[in-house]
Length: 236
Image 1 (cartoon, rainbow, N blue to C red):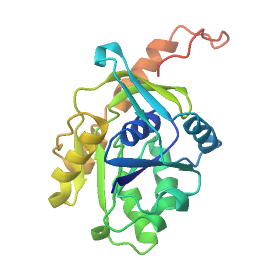
Image 2 (cartoon, one colour; image 1 turned 180 degrees about the vertical axis):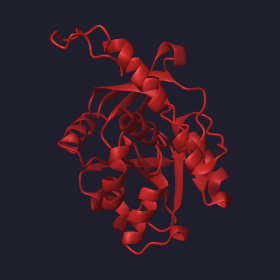
Image 3 (tube, rainbow, N blue to C red; image 1 turned 60 degrees about the vertical axis):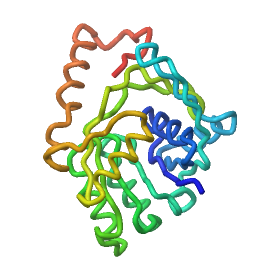
């Protein structure tokens, strides 16, 4: 019997994560997308053949094809029965998504994020506590930062991995389960996920997005007057 995951989010990293998990022979993957019409657009693409994750030539040029099992903006339709729930979104979405899924999470499930901005474990604990769940009834994890630079080519159908990192550190609790969670996530996303020192606070405070992205954005827009559109969307 296959294990089941649910990817939360409808953006670039959600497409890569869902495609890779759905393409794993031992797993099936649902998608919970609460924002706008994301669920409808992704579902339409999935019905046309599923997600193809295309890696760049520098990362081997391989293609992983995965067909998500179910896509919905209703948590009760895609969360129950999942052993793994992954938040694939920016930090401002953690709280609302954690609250939306909390009542439907199975005992023993692992809940975490693909990019560990500070406080994700607090958001998860508060949401689960609000529905009477104690920390011993679920696992929590967070990855150091996004494993790939990626972009959706067509919702529910194709996403490009423009660059993959060689490994991605991860933190998890309880400590007795940390190694198993590290191994599981590494197998699903196709890269090593060594355990990081410093715990959740260390991952949050050392997340490089807040250092690199402002510098990249400044370089991209420093000479732009704001009145002429770009020919192509800037990467970040």
